[in-house]
Every structure is written in structure tokens, then in C-alpha cells.
Image (cartoon, rainbow, N blue to C red):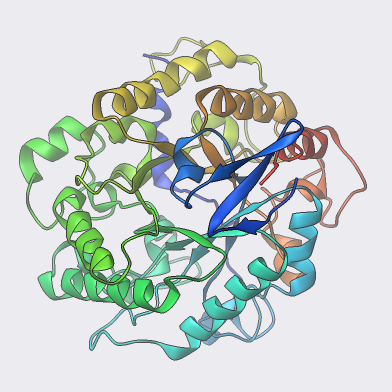
Length: 422
């Protein structure tokens, strides 16, 4: 059975209520950035995250194939899909990207006994080798793992194309699953340490215990009731970081907050003290604009819409986006930590999508943040016919499901990626 529309976030994006209140080379082990008439030596990959915006690119998304739900053609024959080829990865590099956020299933099984799934690891091996061959950098980001299935991202669709038996969020209530998540990352870091493409490990894509199991959307309420418990990501991710550092002292660790790594949850993330950690957000606010559906209400950027549910329209423009991101600025300043945006985006048919993307990218650039948009899809026909609302290469017509030669949103993205010199 084919899936419904795959949004990069689902219920998580209701948090928009808070919206308004070059060339690569190696020399002496370092990375050379072309600057003016000369080059500046970057000593190691962590400087890619701390010295300004060096990495600009996109997410690629894959999930475990479940034959009884997916069949063998919709997202590929498995074990992971949709399938990417070297041609797909090379095409992303040809657009100017130098960074791939690999949003991928974790290497361990989701149900006990929690053990390595060799097919999943082989798939990630192949992806990273393709990215390296294309001359780009990669961050490994695990969507799933022990006690967490892909269905955590669209659990509200239970009873439509899948039943409740596929839901698995036991990682937030089971110490054994959390310990296995730690073990999974220790193995992952040991396996990929030194891989020439890998410049980061994002420990979990969008932690969401607050929503999935507790239905709590206010950070203050969540931490008042559950701080320090198994539901609290703050007590789990430092253990993962420690396990990684036992086998890999160098590769940067990337961590976002609970609440699907939304901006308003970042202030409640407690830095681990690891000196090579980058703190990240996913920025899709306001959800009503970025995730509007073709047959639903139409919102325009710049424009006005009621994002705080007080029955009065609020201004949506670059200034309001800047105010939103000031929350991240304050966190970075208070904790003296680097920031990146590892997911952001807008449906391709949203009126003003090109201006929204331009302004958001410009605000990231002003702050010196690396960023990866959602999403770069592969050339897998059945997938592209149905899961393409964020595929900017398909142009602004939601009824078109193939690449177009040019478009305003495409040009905005290409112009930003043209800034890449690493």
C-alpha cells in the first residue's frame, strides 16, 4: 500500500504558535578553502561548523522498506528506500551543494534483541561512498533505532495505511532500548571514523517524547513533570556522546532538542560539555505556510496569517523570521556553542516560496550557520509521482511530478549554493 504524503515533520510543526512572540583539497590533513587570491587552511572538520557558513546542501531521506505496506516498487525493493544512485548524488553536487544530510534508519534493529542490521549498514556504506565520490561532505543522522520506528513521524495516520502494530516509541520508556541506542552509536562511530566524507553525527532526528507519548507541547510543562526521566532527551544524548568519544575523538556530534528539534525547544537543551558538539534546529515555522496543502487554505509570503491562534493575523516577513531565530542566537551566546540548521524548507507551490527561501537562507548566512534543506529526492519514478511536495526541482505546480528546467525557487537555491567554496 502506498503511503500518504510524507511531510518532513508532522504534528511537531504545530509549534509555530511561538513563531511571532569552489574547490575541495587536502593538504597536511587540513581542508583548504579558496579565499580571494589564496587559501585559508582549516585544520579539522569541526572548523567547518564554527568559522562561518561553509556547508550548504540538502537532506536525502531513506526509510526501512516494509513489503506488506510498501510493495517492491513504490520505494524500491529494499531493504532501504527510495533508492539513490550515483547519478542522483552527482546531480546534487552539480547544483552546487557540498553537504548531504543523510536522514537514514539507524544501524541496529528496532525491536529486541537489538543487534546490527547488516543490510542497513551496507546501504549507508554505499551512500557515503557515493557522496564522497561526488566530492561532498555528509552528516549521518539516524531517524530510527532501538525502540523507535519510522512511524513516529506520522503516527497520527495510524488506521489509514498502517495499523497500530507498526508504532514503536519504546525508547522513551525502556532503559534497555536507550542503552542499545548508545551501543548503536558507539558501533557507528567506530565503523565510520575516518571516512573522508563524514563531518558529523546527528544523534537522533527530531526527538519527540513530548508529543508521541505525552501530548505535551509546552517545554515548561514537559520539564516540570519529566526532567531527568527516560522521556528526557537531556539525560540520554550525553551518554551517546560519551560512547562516541570512546572510539572517535574528532568527528563533530550534532544534537537538537526535544519537540522535534523545533526552535522554541532549543533553550531547554542542556549542553553536554563535549567541546566538539554542534547544536541544531529544524526550521519549518510557520507550519501553516510551509506545509500548506494544494487543496487547503492559501497563504502567501510575505503576508499575514494567524500563527498564535488568537483569531488575528500576524505579519509574516523577513523581520518576523529574524525574531524567531533570535531564540537560537540567545542559546548560542549563552552557551558559547556553534549552531546549524539541518532541516528547513517549504512546499514548492506555496505562493512566495522563493522569497521565503531566500530570506531564510540569508538569515542563516548572516549568522554563519551551515544549513541543509528538505529535500533532494532520487530519480525513482513511483516515489516522485507521490512524495514530491518538497521536491523543488518539480516546480511550483503541485500537479507536475517531473523535473522542470528552471524556476524562481530553483534559482534561489542554486544562487545560495553557488557561495560554496569548500
